[in-house]
Amino acid sequence: MAKTEEEKAISKIEKKTIRDMTSVGTYRAEFLPTIRAYAQLRWQYETLNSQFITEGKPVVEEYTNKNGSTNMRKTPEYLVIETMRKDILNYENTLGLTPIGLKKIKQKGSITPKSNNFMESLKDLNDL
Image (cartoon, rainbow, N blue to C red; front, side):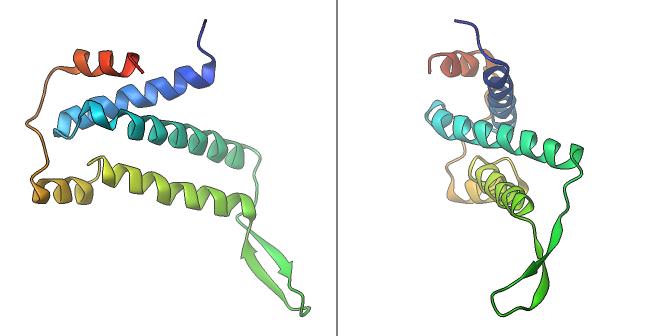
């Protein structure tokens, strides 16, 4: 069965993530479920953010609360994007793909020696 465009895009993000993790020495096959969840979230974020920008949606809107006061607030769409950004950063920290995340992993001594076996990592990904 052929992959959908969404599945191809998510797979591309997974492979890039594995390549990046291998480069910094944090990749392990056991992380594939986390990598997959990260890739799916990343794809959703990129899709939603692109639509948000293309459609020219506002970041803030006027809101009248139940007391009758009118204030400015972030739009629900923007709040979702903002939350996704935070979630993506948390995943990247967990996977050692940010300076802070990599530093934490190195301090715990759980970092593996840098592996150049990228093809083996891709095989693990295809086995899912």
